[in-house]
Length: 225
Image (tube, rainbow, N blue to C red; front, side, top):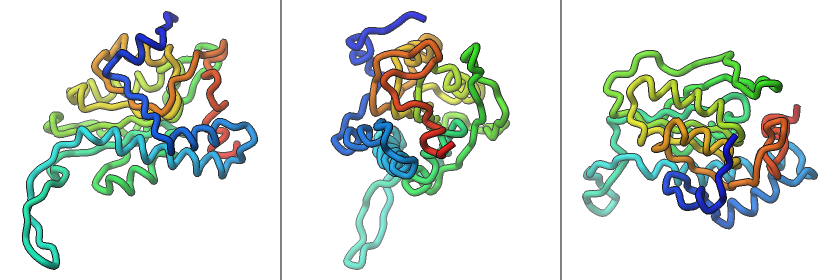
C-alpha cells in the first residue's frame, strides 16, 4: 500500500489531529502496556469526549428565545430538526457510546458489526443496524467511531453504507483515537472529502495490520479479553 509522509497528512485540511494536553496525557496512559483494562477504559473515554466535541462543531444552529430566572433573551442551540447518528464499529467502537449519549442525547446509535480477517485484513460483516430508509438525507449528520484507524477497510465499508443513502459526504465524519497513514490514504483515495478526526497519527502498520507504535488490540485491552 502507498504511504503518505507526515507532511502530506498534516497538510490535508480534512485530517484533524487533536493534540490537547488532556488527550496527550490519556494517550500515554492508554498506550502503556502496564495499564490495566479499567485504566485503558477510563483514559479512552476521556479522549473520546474531547474528540466528539471537536467533531460535532459542524452541527447547524438555530436562534431561539428562552427565559432565564431573570429575563428573556435570544440565544443559539442545535437545530432540533436534524438527525444525528453515532455509528460505532463493534466492538471497540462501543467505547464512544456512553460519552456520545451524554454529549448529544438527541443522537441515535446505529451499531455496525465487522471483524477483520487476519489473513486478508478485509472486514467481515456480522451486524448492521444502519436504518434502511432515510428521508431528507441532507438533514443527517453521521459520526462513525472506531478507536483504531489501521487499514481503514472497516471504516470504508461503514462510510459506503451512508454514502449510498445520499447523505452529503461533508456531513459524514470518522472519529478515531489512533490512526495509521495507510488507513488515512485508503479512506481518502475513495472519499477525499471525508473529514477524519483523530488524537494521534502513528508511524505505520506492521505485517499483521496492527498500528505501530499503537496500543495493541484496542478491543482486547478495553474489554479485557
